[in-house]
Picture (cartoon, helix red, strand yellow):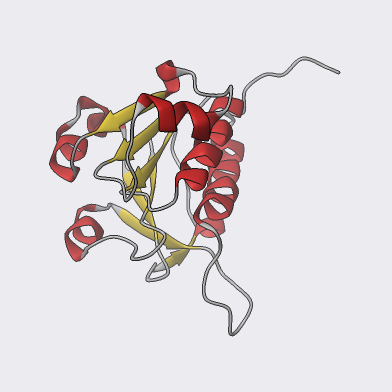
Amino acid sequence: MRLALFQPDIPQNLGAAIRLTACVAVPLEVIEPCAFPLTDKTLKRAALDYGDPSHLMLQPSWDAFITDPARLEGRLILFTTRGAQPFHRFAFEPGDTLLFGRESAGVPDAVHDYAQARLLIPLAPGLRSLNVITAASMALGEALRQTDLWPASEPL
């Protein structure tokens, strides 16, 4: 299981994604270009002390992302307001990559076409969308629950 962000617009969301994936022991892939400078300094600032480099992979382009050997491990699952199926009715598998688009524009049609599934998160009538990392948290939580991949934690 892994989380992927397509050309993120907001550095704080990237920081939240780094923290989320670190806490649940799931790799994070960031598909560039980002709408902000992606340097070691900005990554460190965005990630606080959660920026374990072993969980973060920067992909220089969409083509690099889709040709990465990790794509052979499972399906590419796109979360989109144009989704065909609610995420909580989908059967996730351990090798799935959960892909979320840009905050401002989602993903282009070519990305939609490449995804093996397009899922949506149902919202109350009249509401447009969730914050991308809020949506990713919900989706990743459900996927980890279904696949029993939650990390073992020590009792407090």
